[in-house]
Amino acid sequence: MTIAEQVDFSRETNNKLEEEIRRLSEDLHVLRKRQEDELRDLETRTREDEYKKYNNNLRRLEDKLTAMEQNREIVNKKYYDMIRELQQSEKELNDELILAENDADKYKQENLDY
Image (tube, rainbow, N blue to C red; front, side):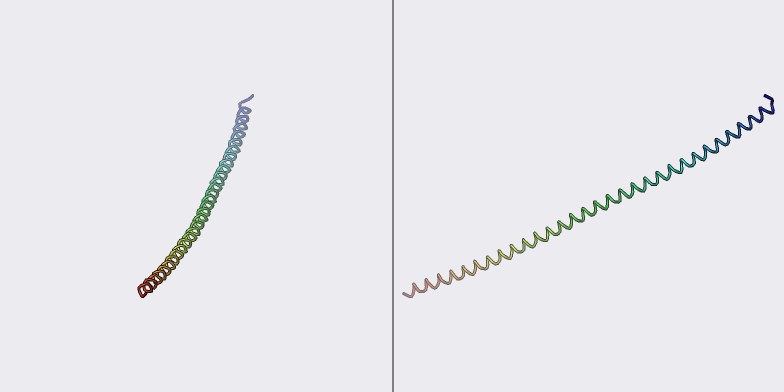
């Protein structure tokens, strides 16, 4: 092989290698871009999943709070109803006691009059 052939061969080999380097660089660029896109997508999906979990937990807590508030209202109503019933019973017993005392006073008075 002559020097001119060797130079041509070296240039040809050099051109092929440079072309291979350009192709590999482009492939690397594409792979990096794809990786960045996939990472960004994963980050977005993860954020969305966390947001959904947060909202679901928030809704569950709000539902529990609403149920607790309703139960508290029911308990308060029962409590005040019981107080009213107790007051009514106390009033009725006091009225009966007054009637019984009046009857007893009348009976005493009638017995004293004889």
